[in-house]
Length: 316
Ligand SMILES: [Zn+2]
Image 1 (cartoon, rainbow, N blue to C red):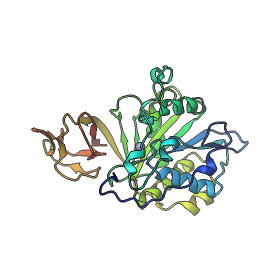
Image 2: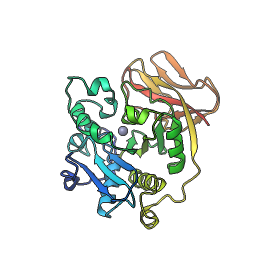
Image 3: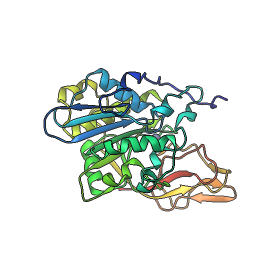
Image 4: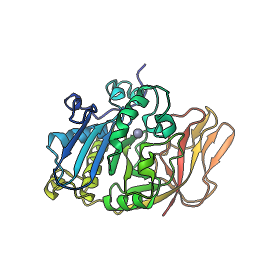
């Protein structure tokens, strides 16, 4: 069955030229400037159907991106899921067995459990251990404005400010079961400088989302002085960017029943003025905003029971 009512404006790129790479890890390529500097990595396809990041990396490869110092790595993470992408059924290729962005705990990585995603995570783990700055490119299920997500560690906030794009940054726990790659221990340790940021670039398959993803990569690389100004200027679209707006995520909202429905077709980033405003119904229960000027982050309208459906945030 095709997925209903979904328009796919983006065409997934051919990533087969990047399979072999030069790192011994499939779909990971490294460019070494030969000069001292950090190891910076940009990831696409943590979720196989979020193709904007793959388009951004394809663009960088095709325009011969090279770091001016340090090392730049480009990786396509859940390529196995991506290779099943079908524009008629775009929801189906998010992962093969499980969400690759939930497995980054030592307990799971060191366990005897097996899944396509755990195999990929174990293969990538030693590589991530060498990365100083990581950008993980994602997209969303609604046409929300793009947003940087991180936990809110000082080093993450500093890097987010330096990058300065997209317009919104939401700080706080993802309220997820398991851990995302940006929470993998080396990145989540406030005693070192290793930093991971996750950016949600917009609606999964909108044309504009691919433009945003490329811009996110360019602003990230510029913030770390990894690319010449001429390269940045030649490829960027949203420049200068609007001033950064920070949001502090305070809680995650989970559905209890299959009958969870938002009262409106929220896209994300709406700010609801008055505490107690009804924004959803979960069976008989009314779900209300917990405080004044409450921002709604990443509403998920395709929900069943026991799913994260939203995060609430305060403007900061
Ligand atoms: Zn994602």
